[in-house]
Image 1 (tube, chains in turn green, brown):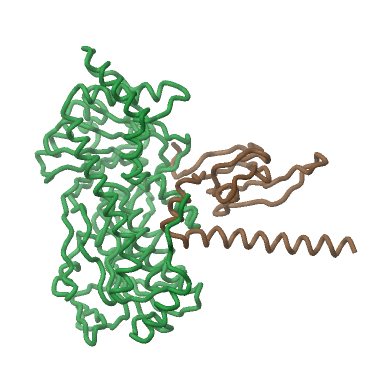
Image 2 (cartoon, chains in turn orange, cyan; image 1 turned 30 degrees about the vertical axis):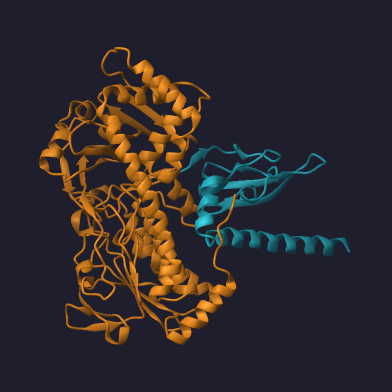
Length: 465
Length: 125
């Protein structure tokens, strides 16, 4: 395996000396404000304080988060499907972060893919529960009695364990006297900082306060997703959904894909498409394929939202003494937003501790991490566009299904299509790796064989294998 | 799928990795306890350590292509998460600081071995 050149110790020292003279290095007593206490803000704070401790740097971190993750419904919610990908569960473990059982609502080891031409159950390649279904906040509205624990609250706790302070204050403005950020609050008070990390996502009003910043932060392109929480008893959810996450690839206009994730006595429906509105939501929920899996007349919806989803990258999510992490800056297309929060949060923290907080420091050491995600998203767009074309033909839908069904039914078969579907839905692999998999001669040969077989007339809808 | 559980469940005494086998993964204990044991050339089994939630093992397989140096088995009911070599190395390539966490534990184990070696030498003189 080749390793790309990393900045040497000498480079870091040169940066450090240069930044000290320009006043852009963090030093003992430096104050850092983190706006937003979701995963991006918590990861940034956690790694910043951990690394500062490693180099004996004494800094202060204030996390501004007005929500309480101990409250159910919108007051404590981060509007997210709540799935931690297979690769992220592993990386968190390698970082020393073990997700407690009280936070993980379900460990997932299989997905069922549903199409109008049939269904296929795809098991985890390692027969292990390495995907975590959880609640970002403290669960949906009316979930007070369900004794759920918040993932975001857990991460915030990690940052607090390293010394971060939580400030539940509303920020009303930001000024830059002498080039240093100064936050202004609703009670007319203000506080000066050496660095601001923006981790508000794209659903916050704070981001509008940055419009006048000289760096000219351009908002990323967004779309609206749909999230709905359905509630029944745990036994009913198990009876209806079994032990899998259910994914739907349907030919409804403007519909991209949707997933139903079992979480104890709740089931979360997450839908991605173009300009999602009530008409599209109803078209999905009443589709015969969806009704055959998840009869919504039996299970009431208790909480729903249509959050904005970041579809791209800000052109420059940094400036002197300011950096935008997680969804506020760059995230992965449709998948693994928490993984992107970890990557960008840690890259920003590393830059601030070992290099400095100037625009140039972030350009050299933080921006490459964002660009890697943005480049991978470009490949992801190509794959979703290809999927859109494939979805339109019944023949290709049947070929995809038949290939995956055959792989799952044959012991020892190389799971070309199963791996592609698994990774597309779980977000475990980068899109670039998935794309490479589709160029494998075995994938192409088996897909063409399945395509030829699918041209023969067949009975409609087969059951899961 | 068990509520709140990640990784794979092992019952008391069940082997997770076996000494002498080639490894491609490292492991992190999620809950319960596992025991690290080693077979000596004389055929005896030596207890090396107990590991608990948050501890990892098998990390040498990530960095070198050698056979497993010890057997690890569940001590009571234990849940263990497997970490793929490819996933970890790809991430370390992007973020070399991730390796620091592993190095810390490996450094700690070398320090413990040094202490044990000194004790053994002291007892032998």
